[in-house]
Amino acid sequence: MQTNDQLILVDLFDRETGHADKAQAHRAPLLHRAFSVFLYDGGRLLLQKRAPGKYHSGGLWANSCCSHPRRGETLTDAAHRRLREELGADCPLQEIGAFVYYHRFAGDLYEYEYDHVLLGRCGGPFSPDPAEIAETAWFTPEALNEALLREPERFAPWFRTACPMVLSHLARIGETQCRI
Image (spheres, rainbow, N blue to C red):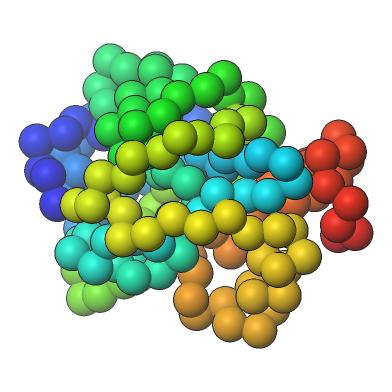
């Protein structure tokens, strides 16, 4: 885990309350701003399997890209930066919702995040950073719904909350025929 990134601490209304380095925010735990980007194209969602060397959730499936804005960086700028760094791609993004989640991974490693869910249409090409991403795959909403119901442990904890938000949004705007 890079510890020199200064994350933005927030309250339950996403109002900035201060800053902390990444390690401190994840060990204390301190509520901080984060984002989850979902890319879709042709009725499918692009997921990534997190690289095994990640400091948490290695080998689990998650959304296309996720991270934290740094001190002084907007949420949108951070999301675009991480899309370029992790997937070698970029596209317009729309925020479709947010949620707070808390998860303990190990003795002193937590996620306590105000997670903004962003959605963008992008078909690639992609060039995943192997330090971040072990593999990528396109999932139909139907296949993803089935996998989440059958084997939720294959997916990162925040994804299990964010993904239904995205699937519902895509169904509402007519981007998928999946009945949620």
